Structure formats: C-alpha cells, structure tokens
Length: 302
Image 1 (cartoon, rainbow, N blue to C red):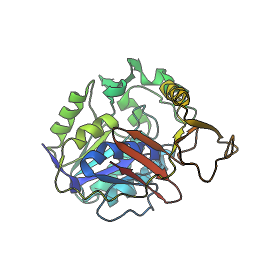
Image 2 (cartoon, one colour):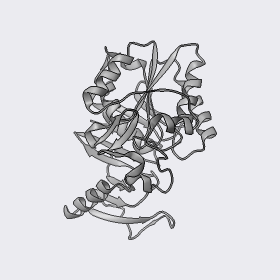
Image 3 (cartoon, rainbow, N blue to C red):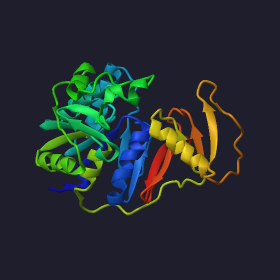
Image 4 (cartoon, rainbow, N blue to C red):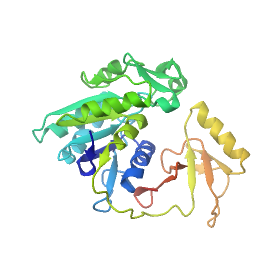
C-alpha cells in the first residue's frame, strides 16, 4: 500500500520534533519546510511540517490549538502526528482536538498510536512504552523538570491527558512499524500518532510527483543546541568536545552565553544546556536541518 504525497499532512508538538520528522520525509520529498509557528508562511507547493509548540501547554489550550490545525488539514487523507516517544506533553488533548478539527469535514477518521523508535531502544509491548527495557517513566525522562512521563502505559497517559480510547499498537522492531502503516493505510482517513520510527515507516510508503528540491535559507553559520537531559546527549557533547568543536554554555535564566560569539564565526558551534528551542541544527544521513527564528521558518535540505 502506498500514499500520494499530496494526501499527507504532518504535525509536530515542538520545533526539534518537527525538524526530526521532516528529516525522515526529506529523502522522499526533496525539500521539507517547517513552520516555526502556525502563523509562519512557507513557499507554496512545498511539503511542510506544522509545529504547534504545544508540548508544555495546558490540556484545553492544546486541544483548541490542535482543533484549529485539524480544520486546516481536513482535505488530507493521512495525518502524521508527531508525539513524544517519552509520552510527555498533553498527548490526549492534542489527539482529541486534532480529530475534532478533522471530523468537521464529514469524513470518517481513525487514529492509531505507535510511539516506538526501535532503532534507539524505545519499544512498545502490551501497550507499555520502554526505553532499553525500562518503563519510560522510570528512566532518564522521569527527571524532566517540565513534563515527566506520568506512566509508561500509553492508553493511561492518553486518557489522563484529556484524550479518549485510541488504538495503541505494539512495536519492537522496524518491521512491526511497517506492518502498522500498511494495515491502516487501507482506511478511508487515518491519523498516525507516533515518533521517528513510525515517520520512517510512513515515509517509505510515499509515492507521486514530488516537488523539485528548492533550497530554503542555507545554514551559513551552523549552530547546534543541546538542551536534552538524556545521558546519551551528554555523551554526544563530550564526544564533540574531544573533536575540537567549540562549545558554549548558555544560561536560560539570564538568557546569555558564557562568552561572546564573534560576528564572523564560520565553524560549527555547539551550545550546551537548554536554549528553549530557539535554534536547532543537526546533520545525519546526508540531511541537514536548521532553524532560524529571525527567518520564521526552518528548512531541511538533502
């Protein structure tokens, strides 16, 4: 079963997730725009990811926002809704609002939730989300100061965050995720709620006339921000430091760096600590993602 690209809408709950998901689709689509906010304007004809920045919103605000997004996307047949594989944020309220907006067009929408990313050890078994075999609410994410996962039981999290009884699919490897996509693409209209594992599986089913690769603003001065509390992120920062990449500290409370940045710097720069999603840049698998709040949009280029 395959999917025409013009039938697909993509939504994410924060900027970093939006860039990550766009990178999954960029190899098939050539160029994927990421709206930093709902008011951002992107070039016509480009595939795009809508960033709702709703991860830390209250349930009602998140529901209202996603209802607006659903109404804007109800001409589509398939929606990919990026959710956190750590089950953080108002998941239930977001899904409920999105479906309310989509259903306004009179179509029959279903929703399948599959947040596994087997390639990095995030798996789902019997509806429980695991990180390398440990329930997600007992691992590193439990120390998230803003939105720690309340439970590893996906259905429980969805219901406790303002959602209903959605179908939750187990997945312990990439083939499981491909089977989930193939089974539900047959439905009239479907929301795939998941993370990067499900995004890659869905991207593999895209077909049709893709737009030419028209680059957005290039990253002339690459800046990488690392605000994650994951142990693997700390190891990556240490590895970058050993590779002679310049690292700056950033104090979110004071909103300043620990040293000045020259106007003419050209080499890759890694900012450690939380930067509150002002900038995000990564390079992996031949795809470069960059975001610049001054431009109002983020672009992913092959």
